[in-house]
Length: 112
Length: 480
Image (cartoon, rainbow over all chains, first blue to last red; front, side):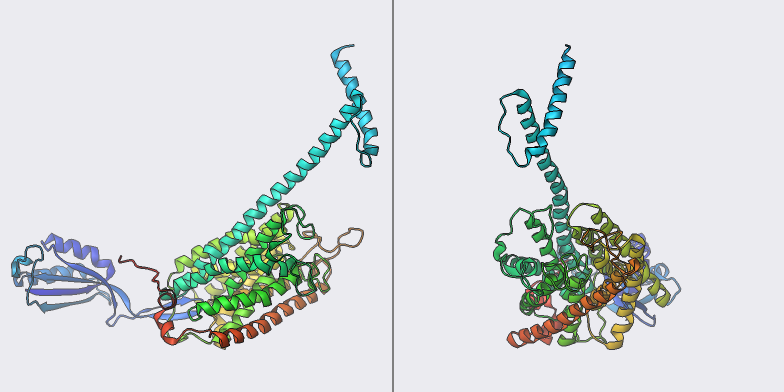
């Protein structure tokens, strides 16, 4: 089992979700995060005080999937999330030790 | 004779007799005469008296209705107006404590005012403070006090003035936001209303006041709704507090942007609308002076919004909504002393000037000197009030308000545009006294409160946030 963690532009959430649903991926966890890679932030001014905001809002999507679906999911993600500009984000892939469905305690691939 | 002729003749007789009757009506109470013409005359006189009373009541009703509404509008300026305006500007962890300061003052100053505050301001005493004759609101009943407002019950006047006494200390809280102990604030404000507000209000508006322009003060200072009494005293005191308490932990290196500008915009809009009660209500009746003040207030706010935005747009390239609402407030502050004395176009000009001046105070002068006047109480109220009070001396005119009259009742020149440049000097005296009283009074009170209970929260409390550390509350439990 693999976990795919994708940090993407906030504007790409809907296209990515739709694309994943189209290939039959139903389970995901989405969180609003802040961060940056090489992307520069922006400046806000309140009554003459300047604030550099370099932690930018992003969306993190986490999906746990069976090994045989990994390549397809990565391709789908890359296609849907890409805008070609700096700030598009990154994808990380992890190994998963165990997965359990809480309702009926199914384990392994059955739980995904 | 026809019925019509009989009726007409009777009417003529009544008219002739009543004309003759009015000649002695004032000195003699007519006894019910045995003949029908005498009875009709008495009835007519009774009717006249009834009508006179009804006219007076109607006049009073209009004035009282407006004044009660104005009082409510001014209270709205504090809660939720100022509470929201200031609340949005602080960090999330301090929003409740900031709002608490405004709200608590609504209760605290009300009690102080009723117990003795109103008396110290508006009872006759000496040139600098009133007496205690109205303490516990004794003798403050429902008949008018003609020295102040002849057509409204004195209690209406009292409650209207109470709202001013509440909002003035609330303005100061902007200077020491996010670091002042609540207990210290309560003690500080109690002493401040007694030592600074009450004397200033008495001098400008009270019977025998040194600066009172309507009641023959020695140095008549034109202050229609409180440029000196409310804004200069609070704004300058705010600066003293900011300097005495010192900067917030982390200021200016740590970013402390407003946590919710939306709240500040809503608050500022409530301030703008409420200000109509503040200024136009200071006419103390529903007549044409109220209209004048209403119009001047609105134009002043609009002018200052534009003044601030233009200055900001030129300087940074981006006009901000926080700038727009701050400009509007600055204009409302500046027009406060002028509102019942100036014509509409000068009101617009006063606004434009105040907007630009306060913008530079906040973005250039404050960082230059480095003081942490957290919510710009000095930059907007202290300076805006000073600018407004001085420009009042320039633009005040008898055409709008014939406040100075000779003993034949002819209007005399009021401000510089009327030809009375000397008024500008009087304004400077009033402004100077406001500054001096605020500085000296506030310093003394800060020293007292600091030695008795201490002013500032501990650094740990400040970092944790006052909502949690002082009040045990969190503003936004959105996950619940």
